[in-house]
Image (cartoon, rainbow, N blue to C red; front, side):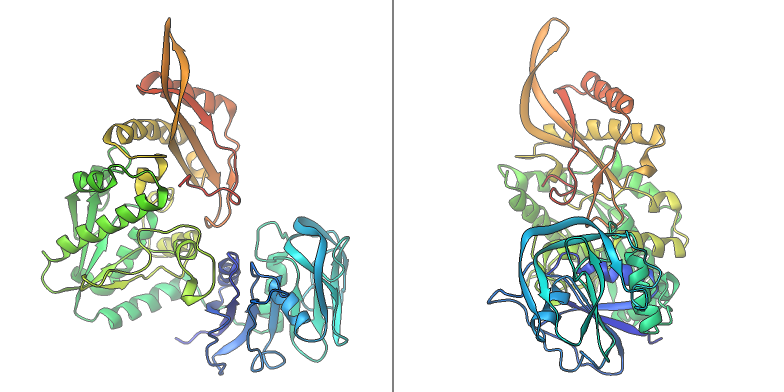
Length: 511
């Protein structure tokens, strides 16, 4: 089935993918392409969105798209940098702002006749994030929204279906952002909203069957939401051609290896458990740098899967549960200019010595979308509600060198924390939680004895997609109880702290 689709041009903003996510929440299919590699503008494209960017339109190396086949010909929405570009390049003026316009603001003026602003009230909160501001708009442009400090918060263009916003409608903090996007996509562009989880499943299964044919696929199964949904999709598409491998890298949660293997009993999946703990500990020995640890783990995963795949006759594909945030934080999406934050062990392809081709059925989806896809396939709700867990496992929750002793300590701490969250009915109120082993020792007193032992940081955040996150205000009584239990039961720990930083500027994981 061919879906109506919207083109999102990426200028390097980390929020570009959030635009895509908001669009897909409206059951509209979107594709992200870099500004410097625009696909052929034919009848398949119904509208275009210009994203934000870390660049200023005044920079010498500012990204400049070729819009001659777009502006005035297709409905067009510019966001942040996109809005400033449409001013800067078409006769207006963009200047440095006296103060950085960042954070919450409120609309003080709305042009009520504007189709884009229909249903948005004066006082509505929006989210700003720019160092420049539009000081003068071209003569055929019209202001349709303002804030106290930003006169040109939104505008339209005469005789075109061209609109722009200096704020970000895609972020949670823009309270009526979803209304504005719906106004543009449904009322102005006329999208029919036919792209649903069920449609994604049906079309992905069809695509996988065509792509894989009669060949065999090996999948690295972790027990998490992403790899599980990927496995079920592939199983529905190719059945027993799928071979699942679950690797014990020695960096899993306490008892996870056995519980994960049992978890898939009865699901019809062909799963093999592989004990590779010693191999991973060996390559991690002496490494303290976070990126070196990630790369070592990623390289060893490849070695293990290469070894295991060679035991399966005629395997041609390696499947991975890679999702959008992994791709965004590791490499440019679709070759675009998005800035790299950190590498992920399951992103970036395979080395030349491996004969396997990579297949990633979920790499256009966010975590919440993966859960909706899983729900539509009737995957167990408890499995779908499981917190995200990083591919490198506890290695990136141990700051400094990874040792068996540190892993053992952290497993015990993590088990106490997660078990307590479940027993206190807090687990499902938290998006992701875990414990961090700090490279810090401090003085403590136990009985009459002085101790000099390690510190643990507890981390719990709320989020929808992992792109932004805020710390969870867990009850003090709960934290006190967990801290006391950890210190009393886990030898080597005498201090527990709670991380109250948000993303950004911090990441969810410490490494």
